[in-house]
Amino acid sequence: MPAVAAVAAAGEWWRTAVIYQVYPRSFADADGDGVGDLRGVIGKLDYLHALGVDAVWLSPIYRSPQADNGYDISDYQDIDPTFGTLADFDELVAGLHDRGMRLVMDLVVNHTSDEHPWFTESRASTDSPKRDWYWWRPPRPGCRGGEPGAEPTNWHSFFSGSTWEWDAATGEYYLHLFDRKQPDLNWENPEVRQAVYAMMRWWVARGVDGFRMDVINLISKAVRADGALPDGAPVPGPSRFGDGSSFYTNGPRLEEFLQEMHREVLAHGTASGEALLTVGEMPGVTLEQARSITDPAHRELDMVFTFEHMRVDHGLSGKWQLRPLHLPDLKANLAAWQEGLAEAGWNSLYWNNHDQPRIVSRWGDDSPEHRVASAKTLGTVLHMLRGTPYVYQGEELGMTNVGWATIEDYQDVETLNFYRESVSGGASDGEVMAGIGPVSRDNARTPMQWDDGPHAGFTTGTPWLSVNPAYPQINAAAAVADPGSVLHHYRRLIQLRHDHHVVVDGRFALLLPEHEQVFAYTRTLGTQVLVVVANMSGEPADVTLPGVGAALAGELLLGTHDAAPGPDGDRLRLAPWESRVVLGAVDGPGRAG
Image (cartoon, rainbow, N blue to C red; front, side):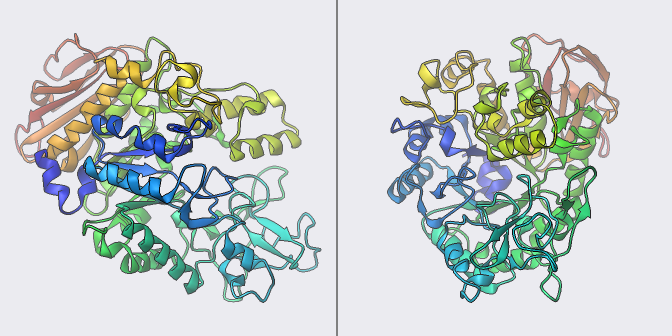
């Protein structure tokens, strides 16, 4: 075991770890039905072990009607038959542990499926013992239930339309921040919380090593003393809906609930006595809130997924109207989080996941000329930061967006709802598809590209979602065989984190904050300084890095271009999409070079 990893093994092991996210539906299909499954994941464990990752985060595999691809759970303590059985799960856990890797489960407890027995009982009658396990409210005073405008609040759903669904049988609405088939649990009810904690303990006893918590900062709503929920501020334009996010994001009891969860479950560790990894997905979380939530003294979570850096290219209409990336904006945001969590707290580091488009198409260059170098450089910039990096399946191959031209190709519920709402509001098909193509979640969900055979080696059947047509050139078999591939670059990045304390704990300092081509920073620990310099453009870049000249002359740990010229003092010429990681020494008190 490398020295750095050995230090963390007995305690906060995730500080030196790299986590690999598997979206099971699209990873590997072992039974030929066109949908990925647990046996498919089991069959690829040696691939993941060779990559060097420390843990696998599984997107939801619970029993589900699949209205939102598994994020609508109907049974928290069973595996959906689409993915296999509990016996398959146990074999997967054992296979990971045998290879020195861990398993992180996706925990979805802001909402359930409307087919979960809890909700079935809740909606049976207004007198049901589980009625207040969910958010039920009567129509707005003076309005008739089921008619537009009668909803208890004007909140707009993440998936378009109202957050309220009318239930004619009981004469009330129920709250769903996402799809109507995903009713929100009422965390104000202690019975709900205890049921969630019992379920978590059950999975920990089964061998789970941590939890990624879906939209966990939405569990506390700003309910008034009379039980009412407030209207949100009107949104611009003709919509009748308002923005209610201030009343359900980072709510008043969020940290109280997380501390209780820690006492009840997380503090007790894994079945083998190690620390459980916890990461909370938190749209809209601020740096100050994240610092509090991840401060070890507060006993809440280890780290959070912030969305801020993934929104620096959003236009006036949000994610559906991307602007070209202004690199100084991205650098400023990442630097703020690096510095803000330097003393207390911990960062999670990611470009991709099942909800984000492919980063090489978004902020890199997916042309044949620059795809490999830009994918490597994006990986370098992220992985050398302080925090725990997350690799989404296919990211290590430089997989690209698929960018289908017609709505019939898409299956993502968010995409389909946005299309219907936009077209019904008067937008043209061409306008809407121009927004969907670069950002739809289906870009991340096309099947994993294993080889250049039929359906990219993902399945012997018909894949549930079409394979990206780039698979003959971009696939795992080709990447493994090519020493200069994106995959082998990622393997080296992961090894650097395992081998060098400065990568784990070095102090971050941003260089050239206003430079529009180059992302450069240092990490300093004791007498060591790590210099990371990356050309994030398709044009050559000549840069001067004041104060790091001596460090630049140090050991080149990793680079994207084999024949790159060396530095001239503190000056450096970078080829398009070139990046370098150099390990040098501090020259003088706290100064590199």
